[in-house]
Image (tube, rainbow over all chains, first blue to last red):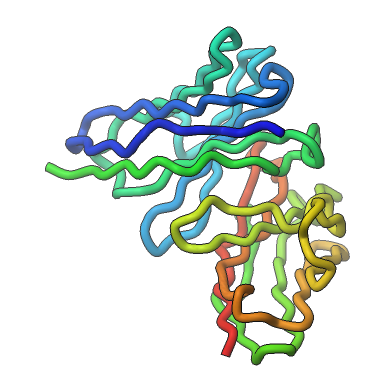
Length: 122
Length: 111
């Protein structure tokens, strides 16, 4: 069973960037899409983008297209989410998720990382 | 505008049945894209509850069921339990956005 473990909480200044990692273990990494979803306080889940490691071609939600970079390292089975322009962001929890098992090819998210809290503060 | 609309909140007494609606449009649910449902408890990662409109992953009780028709979908929870108190989200693909879309979420309160 695939497990996703994310990097720890971050505190960032407005205008800076943050890079969050998502390490996959226990299953196939390269052929399953990894998506990133965030939740700001009091808000709902928001899909940010996705990448299939074997193809290495990310797909970004329109809102994040100019500031988001998704990458995946097939050798370390780790996905990365880098978000710039934190000036416009509020504190949020960022999740990685994978379309494995029941969700393979189905555009749903069956396995999730534990979440990474990114606090934006001067 | 591409969106999935859910009621902000629903409530029910233990043992009762509640439903949560998810209304989309011709660019997502109405375009025959699958609808998926998640349960989200505070401080934890979301959990897949229903995939591909009606299917329960292994381990999800059969108290949870879902359906889809036209541009809408619905999640039903029977025999409400205190542990069901959580936020519930629908999710689908949207052709206009060329990506996934979550509903705004529904907070279920067990009275």
